[in-house]
Length: 351
Image 1: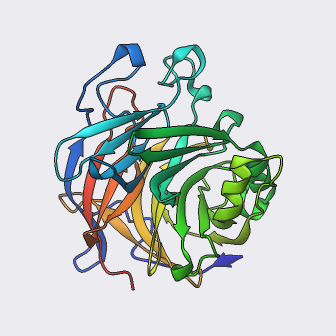
Image 2: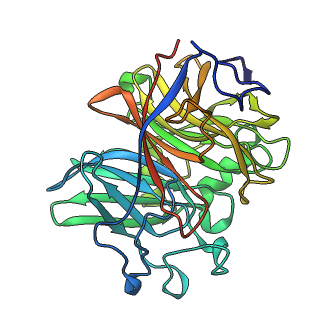
């Protein structure tokens, strides 16, 4: 089902500076992300956070609140102190040949997990992170569960081919190419199912006719399937809604991340001229928006510190728990040598 959209000046002229009075979300500060402990070649870890493909706040025992940043091209999760300078790291198990970094130069880009989204949940009374692969290739049909115990993080890599097969078969959600880029947990108070609803966001940057859409999964059923896929079938996607986000300079805006709020689901979108769901392209502009509980949505432009259209590839968003009108965004530079950046952004009221 296509739904209407109300777009703030999202047109072919959107590459120009916004006119006075136009609602927009503005960058306040930016910071390049480097690990506090530096590089470790023995762990195949660079000195910097290579990509920022999704983020969520999590309370880490003994460390306090941290912004967890997943990376689509490494097997590391960065834990960023947004109020200080510390950036800790959680390691995933190495991949083939001991690699934890993946790119074209190494010739192993297609081996990456492509973790594109992450959200926070509580399991057995402890904070946890759930990250998901894009599903755009078979190695990317995976979820990663990280539980933070008093003895340290426990990471589980959970292949889920049956789940991704169901998502791919739901053409109203996946379109021509499945490419999950965002997810958010909707609790019962926000209209979710008992035990919570996991809302997934498919990015429609694949081969036309690509689809930007959301779909819901029972969180309880998903966790049961991940724990024992033989005893519990993969949950079926429900409440599939397609969204037309508009375009910038002839390039469609497509979902890049999302997070839940009491008013609905906040999302990021980028107008990236990519030829398919795997290869990168030029970013013509970006936006942030809100999907309301009734399925309709509104979005506004993102502008940089100078008030110019933001053309950085924004891939992760998390609202500041202490300041709901402030969000943190992470940027993927699509360059293995360039550190990801953390942006602090002030959001306008969504009307």
